[in-house]
Length: 337
Image (tube, rainbow, N blue to C red):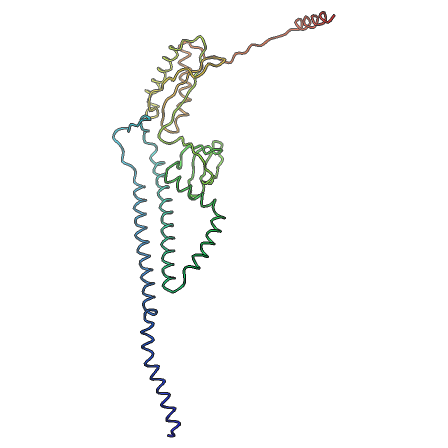
């Protein structure tokens, strides 16, 4: 073998030996990148799944607690505003409670999933070595633009959450939302559906609801104005109205509907045709209109039986005949001469 060939072989073997020696050192230098980073990413993913599962379990427990019906009280609860309302329709109450619970649970679950997912993604990107500063700045600009464009949508969803959390109204309630007055058929996070008296279905954005009148919560009041003649004896009228209300309260047909005996509030106004006397009674929700109609019928019969006149509109009408017209015309002619 020539010296030149021997030298070349020595150089080649030296390079192979150097590479063999440098390979383990490269592995030692990059062992964190090859093993540590994937392992940490796997731990982040597993931890994220565990946290999400625990959060979902907690949300499910909260939803189940909301779904459980409240325990019945042995005695009616007394408050400063009067007796508590009797328990309403069980099926409607359960439907309303279930809808609220399912909706709130779904929203909370989605919020938890998004928050945990974003945090896990940020931690994974940090492990890979991607700078989060520029991404956060870009996301902030994009989020600001989306926020300006979807602020009405965000307001609708926030209002829907507050409506459900505060239990302002629910399915089956009779409400007044301004132009829309009727029965609630659906309560969503963005829209509320109201069926009015004529059968029309209103779709109202929750963010546009500024005030709510709910006729279905706790108790209602039936108010009846009765007009009697000026020559009627008011004490007798009061006695007849109180007796009529007491008999209606004792009627089995209205057992559990009237929460108290109807009370006579007194003279409401002095009209041109008669004296207006107001009668009022507390009822269960949504029964005040039926109670008012029945009470009006019974009051009419009781006043007729007691000989108390219910006045009707009275007007003075002047009638002129042809002779009156001729006399008037002749008198004007004589005055002019």
